[in-house]
Image (tube, rainbow, N blue to C red; front, side, top):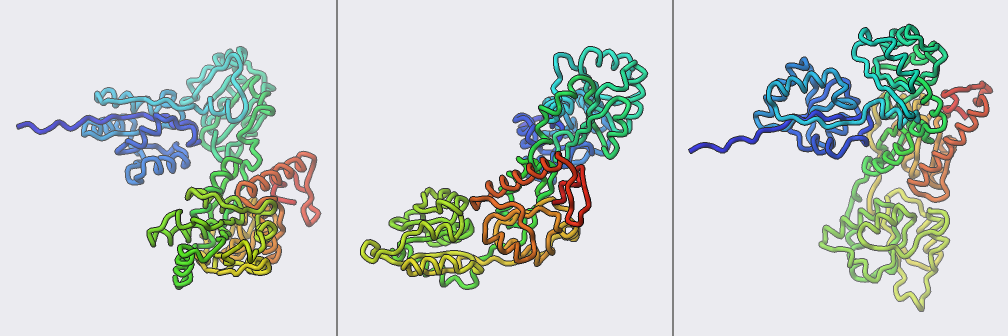
Length: 526
């Protein structure tokens, strides 16, 4: 009796693009997800390593390559013969990569089953992200060996159109000499782009004579665009032109809530840093919440007022404990302090009856909350589940409107542990361009565990109560949205940044000490 043959695996050489995980193709995503082992080398950006961990779901499957291309190709082929599926991640596209080509040849010589999944090259990415389209004729050269580059070939390419060169920073001086030796004018426009599609992509525009000096501070692989395409950059560049591009933004919030903010900030070009300052915990004694849930089922309340997403979550978790669902809200009217809280209620298939029409705050909700009518309202009680440190504004306002209020502690907010020393230093020294406060507790707790943000850090607050708390702690509030929601808060910060850049374009900005500052540094001063 023969045993079943083990299925043979595949080696997939996956072009990952230049660095932005959003540029991974579906086929690349599938290859990473299905891989038993994921190999990468030191050139792979950290953003793609983190994305691969998330996609594959197992950190232990990721392996850093340390062996030669030939040995690595044999190693992957042997693993495939044993039934393993391999994903070899390659920066950009696989075939222009000299090391990747050597590994592919070695795997082929071992008769391994392999696939090559194309990815966007650095040259393609820079053309799109940095706003320098190729035009009618474009030549792309990937320099692996600077000594093998022919000056006349490069010069001819520039005469016919734009030239895009991918090279290591250490080769730029030699490349300039090759361009000049080939007869290229020293005044020909050159743009140098580093960290293409990354959070810190940066493009400098200069000329053949000066691009080496202009590229000081760059590291690793860069892309040079030489010729007519450079002129289009000022009108077509969008990646680096986003309103918060390059801004380091501090998010002092619970880990669960910070994720949504981080994604929105990245869309605006910011680099978010999540620092949990509060943690949400159940109340010390559950008796109040147990009575509240029983009151909901028994019809004790006419209204339930939700003041945060956490309060919605706390009630829903209690429902699940007792085997209840949305039907327990039957006959009950629901009010929410703002759209974010309302969306949390809608996730359970329920549409709130009442939201503020103006300011999304306690005061805004009270402006539209109906007074109790003893004749029409058979039940005159309101359930208010909220945090243990909430203000008394709502309780007082509802009572003045004739309602009896059961003010119930649905959850506690406790101070988180202090962040790492480097984060604390950055907060106090101005290492962050902006900080977003979404509640008064985030202000108090950030100052408590890490100290006050530096005076040159832009402070954005979600609403008036949060802004008042920031002011009490001696912080200058720079941005505040009309509606108290996370999207509006980020939009308000983006608008402030745009205005700041416009002021910078008009001339130097004066600091509080009267010092005139211009250039990128001035964005940190008001």
